[in-house]
Length: 257
Ligand code: PEP
Image 1: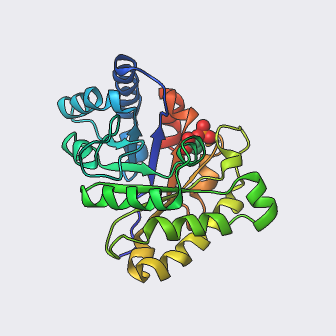
Image 2: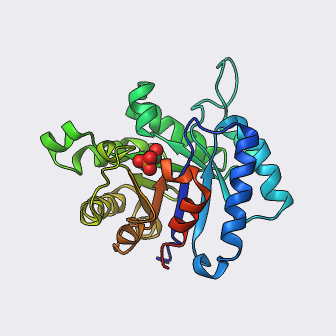
Protein backbone atom coordinates (compact mmCIF):
# COMPACT_ATOMS: atom_id res chain seq x y z
CA UNK A 1 0.00 0.00 0.00
CA UNK A 2 1.73 3.14 -1.19
CA UNK A 3 -1.24 5.52 -1.26
CA UNK A 4 0.00 8.68 0.38
CA UNK A 5 -2.80 11.21 0.62
CA UNK A 6 -1.30 14.68 0.15
CA UNK A 7 -1.21 16.57 3.43
CA UNK A 8 -1.16 20.35 3.76
CA UNK A 9 -0.44 21.40 7.34
CA UNK A 10 -0.58 24.93 8.73
CA UNK A 11 1.72 25.72 11.65
CA UNK A 12 0.40 28.91 13.22
CA UNK A 13 3.33 29.18 15.65
CA UNK A 14 2.66 31.71 18.45
CA UNK A 15 -0.01 33.64 16.58
CA UNK A 16 -3.76 34.17 17.06
CA UNK A 17 -5.74 34.08 20.31
CA UNK A 18 -8.71 31.73 20.48
CA UNK A 19 -11.14 34.25 19.01
CA UNK A 20 -8.86 35.02 16.10
CA UNK A 21 -8.36 31.28 15.68
CA UNK A 22 -12.10 30.73 15.32
CA UNK A 23 -12.31 33.56 12.80
CA UNK A 24 -9.49 32.10 10.70
CA UNK A 25 -10.93 28.57 10.68
CA UNK A 26 -14.35 29.93 9.72
CA UNK A 27 -12.85 31.91 6.84
CA UNK A 28 -10.80 28.92 5.76
CA UNK A 29 -13.79 26.59 5.86
CA UNK A 30 -15.76 29.12 3.84
CA UNK A 31 -13.16 29.47 1.14
CA UNK A 32 -12.59 25.70 0.94
CA UNK A 33 -16.28 24.81 0.88
CA UNK A 34 -16.90 25.90 -2.69
CA UNK A 35 -13.65 24.29 -3.76
CA UNK A 36 -14.21 20.86 -2.27
CA UNK A 37 -13.74 19.12 -5.63
CA UNK A 38 -10.40 20.88 -6.08
CA UNK A 39 -8.90 19.25 -3.01
CA UNK A 40 -11.06 16.16 -2.65
CA UNK A 41 -8.13 13.86 -1.96
CA UNK A 42 -6.02 16.28 0.03
CA UNK A 43 -5.87 16.25 3.82
CA UNK A 44 -5.73 19.62 5.55
CA UNK A 45 -4.50 20.12 9.11
CA UNK A 46 -4.05 23.17 11.32
CA UNK A 47 -1.65 23.45 14.26
CA UNK A 48 -2.91 26.25 16.53
CA UNK A 49 -1.33 27.27 19.85
CA UNK A 50 -2.43 25.11 22.81
CA UNK A 51 -4.78 27.80 24.09
CA UNK A 52 -6.76 27.72 20.84
CA UNK A 53 -7.17 23.96 20.52
CA UNK A 54 -10.41 23.63 22.47
CA UNK A 55 -12.12 26.44 20.56
CA UNK A 56 -10.99 25.13 17.20
CA UNK A 57 -11.99 21.58 18.09
CA UNK A 58 -15.46 22.73 19.13
CA UNK A 59 -15.90 24.57 15.83
CA UNK A 60 -14.61 21.67 13.71
CA UNK A 61 -16.93 19.24 15.48
CA UNK A 62 -20.01 21.45 15.49
CA UNK A 63 -19.72 22.36 11.80
CA UNK A 64 -18.29 18.98 10.72
CA UNK A 65 -15.39 20.69 8.97
CA UNK A 66 -12.91 18.45 7.16
CA UNK A 67 -9.81 19.79 8.90
CA UNK A 68 -7.51 17.73 11.11
CA UNK A 69 -6.13 19.21 14.30
CA UNK A 70 -2.49 19.22 15.29
CA UNK A 71 -0.48 20.44 18.28
CA UNK A 72 2.81 22.30 17.93
CA UNK A 73 4.57 20.39 20.71
CA UNK A 74 3.94 18.02 23.61
CA UNK A 75 5.67 16.82 26.76
CA UNK A 76 7.82 13.70 26.56
CA UNK A 77 6.26 12.72 29.91
CA UNK A 78 2.88 11.15 30.60
CA UNK A 79 1.82 13.28 33.58
CA UNK A 80 3.11 14.73 36.83
CA UNK A 81 5.33 17.52 38.09
CA UNK A 82 6.11 19.22 34.77
CA UNK A 83 4.83 22.75 35.26
CA UNK A 84 3.75 24.38 32.03
CA UNK A 85 3.83 21.22 29.94
CA UNK A 86 1.01 19.53 28.02
CA UNK A 87 0.74 15.77 27.68
CA UNK A 88 -0.11 13.68 24.66
CA UNK A 89 -3.14 12.25 26.46
CA UNK A 90 -4.52 15.76 27.05
CA UNK A 91 -4.16 16.50 23.35
CA UNK A 92 -5.64 13.22 22.26
CA UNK A 93 -8.66 13.87 24.45
CA UNK A 94 -9.16 17.15 22.59
CA UNK A 95 -9.41 15.42 19.25
CA UNK A 96 -5.85 16.28 18.26
CA UNK A 97 -4.53 13.96 15.55
CA UNK A 98 -0.95 15.12 14.94
CA UNK A 99 1.81 16.53 17.13
CA UNK A 100 4.81 18.40 15.74
CA UNK A 101 8.04 17.20 17.29
CA UNK A 102 11.46 18.67 16.70
CA UNK A 103 10.42 21.87 14.95
CA UNK A 104 13.60 23.89 14.44
CA UNK A 105 12.20 26.69 16.60
CA UNK A 106 12.02 24.16 19.48
CA UNK A 107 15.41 22.65 18.72
CA UNK A 108 17.13 26.04 18.49
CA UNK A 109 15.00 28.29 20.68
CA UNK A 110 14.44 25.75 23.47
CA UNK A 111 17.58 23.68 23.15
CA UNK A 112 15.74 20.45 22.37
CA UNK A 113 18.16 17.62 21.71
CA UNK A 114 17.70 14.71 19.32
CA UNK A 115 16.99 12.54 22.40
CA UNK A 116 14.23 14.86 23.58
CA UNK A 117 12.70 14.84 20.11
CA UNK A 118 12.80 11.02 20.13
CA UNK A 119 11.14 10.94 23.55
CA UNK A 120 8.43 13.30 22.31
CA UNK A 121 7.82 11.20 19.20
CA UNK A 122 7.39 8.16 21.42
CA UNK A 123 5.11 10.04 23.82
CA UNK A 124 2.96 11.15 20.89
CA UNK A 125 2.73 7.63 19.50
CA UNK A 126 1.85 6.16 22.91
CA UNK A 127 -0.92 8.72 23.32
CA UNK A 128 -2.44 7.76 19.96
CA UNK A 129 -1.17 10.83 18.11
CA UNK A 130 0.82 10.78 14.88
CA UNK A 131 4.16 12.47 15.42
CA UNK A 132 5.05 14.92 12.64
CA UNK A 133 8.81 14.78 12.92
CA UNK A 134 10.57 17.94 11.73
CA UNK A 135 14.12 17.65 10.47
CA UNK A 136 16.34 20.07 8.61
CA UNK A 137 19.78 21.53 8.21
CA UNK A 138 20.98 25.05 8.95
CA UNK A 139 22.84 27.09 6.35
CA UNK A 140 26.09 26.18 8.13
CA UNK A 141 25.19 22.47 8.11
CA UNK A 142 24.44 22.75 4.40
CA UNK A 143 27.81 24.32 3.65
CA UNK A 144 29.67 21.87 5.85
CA UNK A 145 27.87 18.53 5.35
CA UNK A 146 25.53 18.97 2.38
CA UNK A 147 21.75 18.96 2.67
CA UNK A 148 20.84 15.45 3.81
CA UNK A 149 23.34 14.51 6.56
CA UNK A 150 21.81 16.45 9.45
CA UNK A 151 18.16 15.69 8.58
CA UNK A 152 18.95 11.98 8.34
CA UNK A 153 20.76 11.94 11.69
CA UNK A 154 17.84 13.81 13.29
CA UNK A 155 15.39 11.35 11.75
CA UNK A 156 17.24 8.28 13.01
CA UNK A 157 17.26 9.68 16.55
CA UNK A 158 13.60 10.68 16.38
CA UNK A 159 12.33 7.22 15.42
CA UNK A 160 14.90 5.23 17.42
CA UNK A 161 12.45 4.15 20.14
CA UNK A 162 9.32 3.87 18.00
CA UNK A 163 7.88 0.48 17.11
CA UNK A 164 8.38 -0.25 13.40
CA UNK A 165 4.64 -0.10 12.74
CA UNK A 166 4.24 3.39 14.20
CA UNK A 167 2.69 5.87 11.79
CA UNK A 168 4.75 9.02 11.45
CA UNK A 169 4.87 12.00 9.13
CA UNK A 170 8.26 13.51 8.35
CA UNK A 171 8.57 17.22 7.57
CA UNK A 172 11.79 18.20 5.84
CA UNK A 173 12.32 21.83 6.74
CA UNK A 174 15.68 23.37 5.86
CA UNK A 175 16.24 25.91 8.64
CA UNK A 176 17.55 28.47 6.14
CA UNK A 177 14.22 28.31 4.30
CA UNK A 178 11.92 28.78 7.30
CA UNK A 179 10.40 32.24 7.45
CA UNK A 180 13.13 33.56 5.15
CA UNK A 181 11.17 33.90 1.93
CA UNK A 182 13.92 31.78 0.39
CA UNK A 183 12.31 28.39 -0.24
CA UNK A 184 14.32 25.39 -1.35
CA UNK A 185 13.90 24.46 -4.99
CA UNK A 186 11.57 21.52 -5.67
CA UNK A 187 14.64 19.54 -6.78
CA UNK A 188 16.46 20.26 -3.50
CA UNK A 189 13.39 19.20 -1.53
CA UNK A 190 13.03 16.03 -3.60
CA UNK A 191 16.69 15.05 -3.15
CA UNK A 192 16.40 15.13 0.64
CA UNK A 193 12.89 13.63 0.64
CA UNK A 194 14.19 10.70 -1.41
CA UNK A 195 17.11 10.24 1.01
CA UNK A 196 14.64 10.32 3.92
CA UNK A 197 12.51 7.63 2.31
CA UNK A 198 15.59 5.49 1.71
CA UNK A 199 16.60 5.90 5.35
CA UNK A 200 13.07 5.01 6.50
CA UNK A 201 13.43 1.65 4.74
CA UNK A 202 16.24 0.77 7.14
CA UNK A 203 14.63 2.40 10.15
CA UNK A 204 11.00 1.25 9.82
CA UNK A 205 10.98 -1.29 6.99
CA UNK A 206 10.00 -1.13 3.31
CA UNK A 207 6.26 -1.06 3.78
CA UNK A 208 6.28 1.78 6.32
CA UNK A 209 8.78 3.71 4.24
CA UNK A 210 6.59 3.45 1.17
CA UNK A 211 3.49 4.57 3.09
CA UNK A 212 5.05 7.43 5.08
CA UNK A 213 4.22 10.95 4.03
CA UNK A 214 7.18 13.28 3.68
CA UNK A 215 6.37 16.99 3.63
CA UNK A 216 8.45 19.95 2.58
CA UNK A 217 8.41 23.09 4.72
CA UNK A 218 10.10 26.47 4.39
CA UNK A 219 8.59 29.59 2.80
CA UNK A 220 5.87 27.67 0.98
CA UNK A 221 3.35 29.92 -0.80
CA UNK A 222 0.53 29.51 -3.29
CA UNK A 223 3.07 30.45 -5.96
CA UNK A 224 5.57 27.67 -5.29
CA UNK A 225 3.47 24.83 -3.79
CA UNK A 226 2.73 23.00 -7.06
CA UNK A 227 6.42 22.51 -7.82
CA UNK A 228 6.99 20.69 -4.54
CA UNK A 229 3.96 18.43 -4.87
CA UNK A 230 5.04 17.48 -8.39
CA UNK A 231 8.03 15.66 -6.90
CA UNK A 232 7.79 11.91 -6.44
CA UNK A 233 8.77 11.85 -2.79
CA UNK A 234 7.16 15.06 -1.55
CA UNK A 235 3.66 14.29 -0.24
CA UNK A 236 2.64 17.65 1.13
CA UNK A 237 3.77 20.80 2.87
CA UNK A 238 4.19 22.23 6.34
CA UNK A 239 3.29 25.88 5.98
CA UNK A 240 4.09 28.58 8.54
CA UNK A 241 3.51 32.24 7.65
CA UNK A 242 1.21 31.56 4.70
CA UNK A 243 -1.13 29.46 6.87
CA UNK A 244 -2.24 32.56 8.79
CA UNK A 245 -4.09 33.98 5.77
CA UNK A 246 -7.24 32.05 4.87
CA UNK A 247 -7.20 32.91 1.17
CA UNK A 248 -3.53 32.13 0.73
CA UNK A 249 -3.70 28.87 2.70
CA UNK A 250 -6.81 27.86 0.77
CA UNK A 251 -4.93 28.41 -2.51
CA UNK A 252 -2.07 26.26 -1.22
CA UNK A 253 -4.53 23.49 -0.36
CA UNK A 254 -5.83 23.68 -3.93
CA UNK A 255 -2.35 23.21 -5.34
CA UNK A 256 -3.67 21.14 -8.27
CA UNK A 257 -5.57 24.07 -9.75
C1 PEP B 1 7.35 26.39 9.71
O1 PEP B 1 7.29 27.09 10.69
O2 PEP B 1 7.27 25.17 9.84
C2 PEP B 1 7.53 27.02 8.39
C3 PEP B 1 7.76 26.27 7.34
O3 PEP B 1 7.43 28.39 8.32
P1 PEP B 1 7.33 29.30 6.97
O4 PEP B 1 6.35 28.64 6.04
O5 PEP B 1 6.86 30.63 7.44
O6 PEP B 1 8.70 29.34 6.36
